[in-house]
Image (cartoon, rainbow, N blue to C red; front, side, top):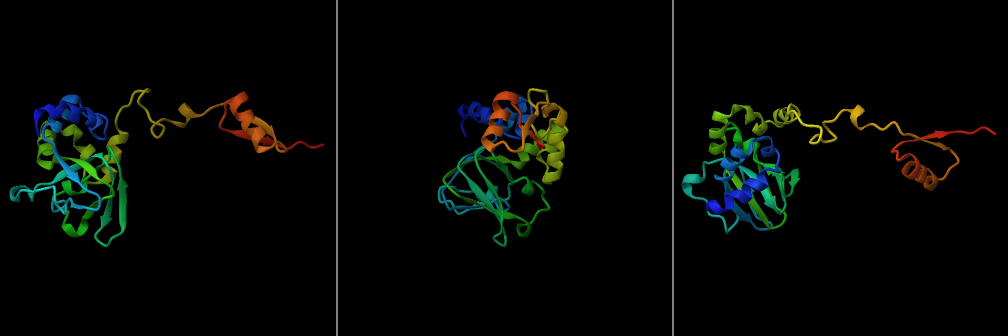
Length: 211
């Protein structure tokens, strides 16, 4: 890969989790190690064995033992367990291959990734990540093989109010005190107008009137 592509890859990775939790200098370091691979629709990628049915991808013998983290630049893929059961469907900016960063994972415990459409992948060498984590161990948990560890590390990040997503913010931060009080005999359309235009509320409280 030429150095001219590094700024573009860095910009892309800066918006992809978990790379967006790292300083840009480290993301740039990661970007400089990226290998770019094209996988055609229907072609199969085996992250555990670092092999593929793609005719356009040539894997050197010396690279077959290497492990990679895969980032989907464009396109779509699905993961299938060894028994054919669907594991996940992934699109642009999704990352997979965390499982195979664990050296104890065998082919039998792994899965295969199938291109649902023509897909462009960024391959990040495991050894490059290991080198970075040796100097910056505080980012290692974001790339852990176990999903629960990555989730915990994501929740432990200190977000600014501007950066907080709905899943991290507290109920008190997103709750609205505006509640539309409506009559039980009102139509759905009338209630919707009351909620939207008068109270700007997502909640309606129905009151039964006794004549």
